[in-house]
Image (tube, rainbow, N blue to C red; front, side, top):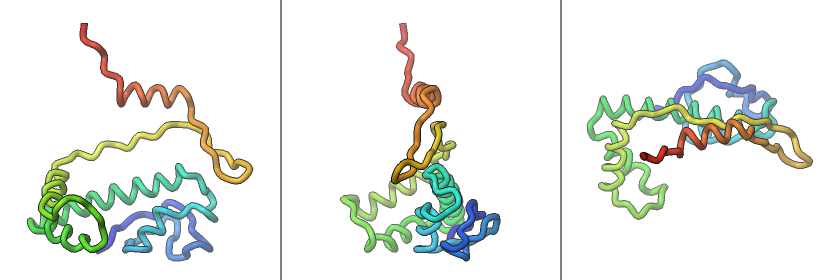
Amino acid sequence: GGVTVNVLDDFTGVDDTLIKGKDVTLFGEHALHYVRIRKDLEDSTNQNRMKRQQQYMSALYQKIGEAMEKDKDFIGNAVLEVAPYMTSDCSANKLSDILEAIKDYEMTPIKNIDGNATKGETYMEYYVDDNSLRETIMELYYIPEEQ
C-alpha cells in the first residue's frame, strides 16, 4: 500500500510529483528517489536527506506495525515476498522470528550531531560541533564505573 509522507523539500525540476508540504504515498523506486536524492535540491546537504530518511523509516515502521496488528501472517508473507530480492544467510523462519521480535521494539528518536554543512571545492562538507559530538558519545557509550 505504499508509505505516505509529507514532502519536506522542494523537488521542482527533479521530480515534480514531490511538492513540498504535500502528502504523497510512495512506492518502490519513487520512495527510493525520495530518500536518496539530494543533488539539484535547494538544500542539498546530507542532513536534509537524512531527515527525509528518518521520516520515511518512521512512517514505514508505523505502517508495518499496523499491518502486523491486522494480519498475524503479515511478517511471514512479507519475508517470502521479498526473499527473491535479498541475500541473507538467515532462513525465512529466522528472518520471520527477527521481524516478529521487532514489533515489540520501541523506536527511540534518532540522534543527530550538530555541525555546519558547507560547499567545499567539489562536494558538500560537514564539520561536526566538538561539544555536540562529545555529548552524544557520552550519552550513548559512557557507563560510569561502580566503586
